[in-house]
Amino acid sequence: MHELDFFFNPGSIAVIGVSRSPDKIGSVIFQNFFDSTYTGDVYAVNPNAESVFERKCYPSVKDIEAGVDLAVIAIPASGVLQSLKDCIEKGVKGCVVITAGFSEIGDKKIEEEMAKIAKGKIRIIGPNVIGLYDSYSGVDTIFNAKYRQGRPGKGGIAFVSQSGAFGSALMDWCVNEGVGLSKFVSIGNRVDVDETDLLDYLAEDEATKVIAVYLESTKNGRRFYEKLKSVTKKKPVIIMKVGRSAEGVKAAKSHTGSLAGSAGIYSGLFRQAGAIEAKDTEDLFDFAKALALPRLRSGRVQIITNGGGFGVIAADAVVQNGLKLAGLGENSRKAIKRIVPEFATVSNPIDLTGNSTSKMYENTLKAVLEDGNVDAVIIILLLQVSSLESNVIESIIRMKSYGKPIVVCSTGGEFTDLHKKLLEGSSVPVYPTPERAVKAIRSLSL
Image 1 (cartoon, rainbow, N blue to C red):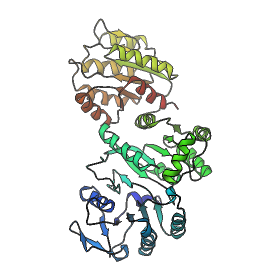
Image 2: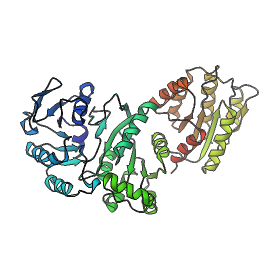
Image 3: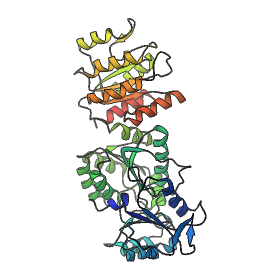
Image 4: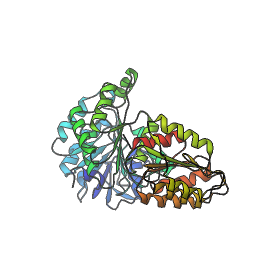
């Protein structure tokens, strides 16, 4: 078992700073566990209350009769050091320090003291974080209420972020898109546990297939590089490095106390270590979904569409992104011609026209995926077409068994969104534009 596993699979949790007020940060975190799948014990700590939300409240973590694996500290900065000492005396293994007001505002002394007190005795995530979330164990120390910020279902993407706000937005996006996460960790000011420690943990985590990172700076560049190089041999890592401009560097320093380095140096470091760099938020989201797919053996892409214009846009994007339009074998072409309308185009793109049906998509997909000249498929699915039955979704999901990357481009209103979530829930990534679908395929070759 990894030394950080107790953060994600603790036997018991204490929330220090639970208040009678339901909207206070500590109270929100405590209430998150009321309808969580977490099966361990959760204790409330507040020296000024005997009970909160009809649950017993303890004056100190030291007063809890049973053992405590993980503590969440959500109190003013002035009380954090004493709470940390209490946790050490209690034998707590790790702390998530939600509290802000440290190096990000220029006060490094308390953080230095935290590190000194904790060394060799307890592990710390934070301070200045929104918390962590594990969709499998049910651990949820996020300080945003569930009715304000969604919690993604189970999935294969783990997300590590120096920015709590960015992470919060990402989790809401995952919920809206039907994309699952394995874990989310906000690392904030990194007084102890940092991005390198979490890479090491996530590399061994069976639930995590892809690691995505929002990074303002590295705590130890050499250590990070060596660990990143070893982790990318096991699973894909996508990194969005911010603070690329002089203004961005200044903003990063005021945000988490980070000292960002040269953008060019970081880009080179990522490339040499085998990581994929996301240039913007869109890339980070899109690549994270795609990288759970099989790797791209070569660059030959087949497009199947029921909208000619979208097919042309996709074909242009394939070439512009350094990929190739696949050339179907003669047997495949003959098979597809027997499937599609006489006036349909059987080349690349294959245009099934506005008369497309789910059976046409299924049989065309089979023929294409069985063709040795095809490495990946982009399916453009305009669900507004009345002849296209909803069971096309099940047909596409079944095609995953061929072991080739399949991405879908689909855009529309509520009807389309409902079907997109069904695909995403089965790990078939869906993108709103052909260009984004192609870039996602390209990420599989980086």
